[in-house]
Length: 292
Image (cartoon, rainbow, N blue to C red):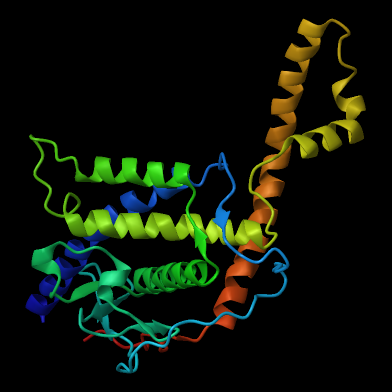
């Protein structure tokens, strides 16, 4: 029994290292999601509009038949200090975990694995598995919808992805890292970043408000609360300096509200995309059990 616990712990520690790499890679896309310098390129009939409150009808290519998705094996691990059990998922790399409009989602879509680990099952927490699977489903769905709506990345976004690829492929001579610095990880990062950018563009095009405070919002707030900030000086230089301070202060006030509104509308938009798609995800849960 102690040997089994040790093997399980080693598996958890092993996947933790890989997931840390995924976490690092996922921290990079937000820098790509700053306010775009140009609108996304969309090739569509001018008469077609898509209100954000109603997901449009889309046609996706029908892939060949495949095995129905199945949930991973559920495990429980009890620490030596008699703490609460850790619920784990053992994922087989050949297993179909979900389908998105008939496209299979497997372990390689959840996290990047180096070539020598590509055919090795991975053990992770049940919570981490649920998070990675949901992210993989959203990533695949975003790419499919963007292709169906003929939405492409802008040229500045392509350049930023190219720069990201160059950094990922650059190997420091004094660092040995076969997990993060490998082609599989770079390609995974490229696909993930592109999907995030396209999903943001789809949301913007559908009417989801920006997460950034704009000048009009600052001006409207100032006019409503002018008594709190006072009148601007008549001297142009002093007026400009005073307005810069007021502008920053108002943006700090409005930013949490604007971001909260964006997140709520964005999540609703994503759920609309999911409800309009044919997504099959098996139920996965770990039943409570006693320590043996």
